[in-house]
Image 1: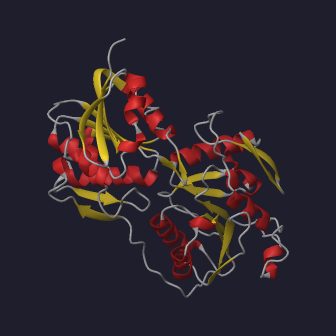
Image 2: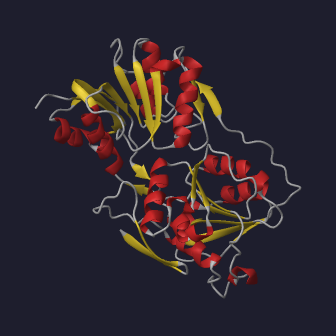
Length: 395
């Protein structure tokens, strides 16, 4: 837990799921810089004098991309709407708002797939890692803006590029940036009512080529912000080339499903199988459902869950888990997500059930699997990736 001190109070914040051993902070210098600006505490040497005036927060406030709820919690007394693509970020915000003493309905927790507010007076944007997600969200929110809307983005200097500013400029209106402070920067954009950037170009789709193994010929549907939305990533392609099939009426889980091509390929190869698609990303789950419906005939055989790994999947109910785990949490490299996925898979599997994992060789996933399962077998490998199989044994 770590404390964020603002003009509105001091808040003890955590990530989700809460782990006292987690060394990563639940807020950043970019969050703090934006909050200082809103309170009128910006650097007096700022080039624009209006940057040293408090922002009127009495209207409708929308907070987009708040990674762990720091902005939403600090502004909770103003009743903001938090719009997020992440289940984990949403749950972190829920917990942090409650810990700060606010009622559950003090803020509205919305996803990127929900309808945005009809009118927005203050739009705050935590710049995401995905430029596509930023593009989609600005398109979705632009109709709710008016000439008086205050639009402020924030991010670390390494996260804000010319392409980032170009999106604000093209979709919202004239855009400029602040000076850098503690390696963070603010973005100021003035809504232009005459600007019409057209509809969002998302979702997009592509057809998997002949080198995609069991996935060849499938149509992959991708909402903005989904991993490798423009083309199939090489790790998933490698697993598709060695996908375990012929398991009949098995319960298969596509864990960290992304656009769902692994689970969909398993369903197409084994028409009697039931597939559960799980991801913490709301756009990913929406993509997986769209991919499945574009390729599989019986939608009753599939379930789509936005959640924390396999926390809601009944123990001992799964025959096969397919997993291409991420090893980044936003900008930080971390093995915590993979460990949580592997642990959840072991709990969810029936005795004799299998976890199949594809990952970069240097990540040494076999060490984690042997510790959890007591076994780990190399199914296939190439110079970059390795596919591992772990079996749940009776103990």
